Image (cartoon, rainbow, N blue to C red; front, side, top):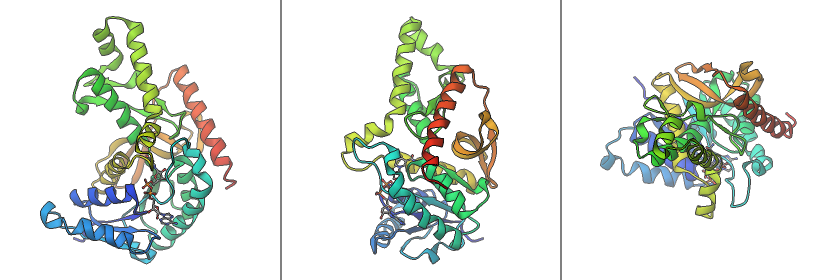
Length: 318
Ligand code: TXD
């Protein structure tokens, strides 16, 4: 049986890590496309030359021609500029929507059956644009943000409580921006509510709340924290790992429940609009959206996040 084919549009920082992770996990043959001549060919040659050491039997190649993404099962898009210190993700909309338009046409014309995962920022707007231009069914066009935002939240909780990251579940909903909604009530360690453990640790509900609020705020600002430290560019290891989890769930029909930017169909009172929610990802793409029962405060935060995304998407005049 032929190996699955994974195409990466954009061979920059995230694209490079994506190519290496897909190869190391033998998810399929990898094609990296970029408009910069020779760069994707060079990067993929470098990765492929380590295959005897790493022991992977998939091909990893680079191209400047969209024809080479034909027959892709998965396409992951990172094409576009990253933020510089002091910039918000939304500041990228003008330049990245031009790039996303040409990328989406390339995907539509050359890989019409692919499951598409967008990573480029501003995330929710870029996913919306890609689905409009490709015309692909919404279950085959989604965005990666929530897996990463949730992973950051989970990491902070694990570090705070001194427990394995493997036992922490933490979820963020909403847009991939300053208004994202880390859900405190659903954060748990092996099923135990995190607030309960914080109260045990500090013996004081107010202190526990203070510590949780700090973790929530750090999660919301986590992308910016990395941007500031790097001084040039934005996070790239963790976004790549997050998108690979989504691609793997699709390719292996794992049906993992992953926070994903998906087209809502009435959930949370939102219709026909892309935003981050819990999704089941399997061979059918976005197979199901799981809607949580939010309390009044959580719903208000979600409404606020959706409103921010709507304003941004509205500015594209689609
Ligand atoms: O979780 C998330 N969703 C994100 C998203 C987390 C961090 C960063 N995120 C965003 O991903 C970031 O704000 C950017 O918009 C993208 C890509 O970030 P990356 O760090 O990989 O940026 P690079 O290194 O600048 O790489 C972008 C590549 C670069 O090689 C360009 O030559 C290429 O995109 N590029 C194009 N490729 C194909 N087609 C076109 N038109 C094109 N224009 C630029």
